[in-house]
Length: 78
Image (cartoon, rainbow, N blue to C red; front, side):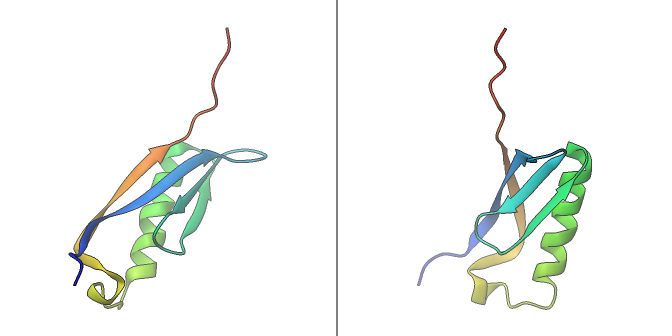
């Protein structure tokens, strides 16, 4: 049996038209926001709702897993 994961990984990217899009890598959770703060808030809320009343062990998750976010940035050329 594999050990339970203590983290859920997510990536935040710049939206195609505006704002930001956040996507979990292990869960079917995608959300967006106009600002980074709003996007992170929406991501936390979406993950909480997704996991509500779920058997975390059945999903391979330890109790109260942390969400680790990676931000993808476009290079800026001077």
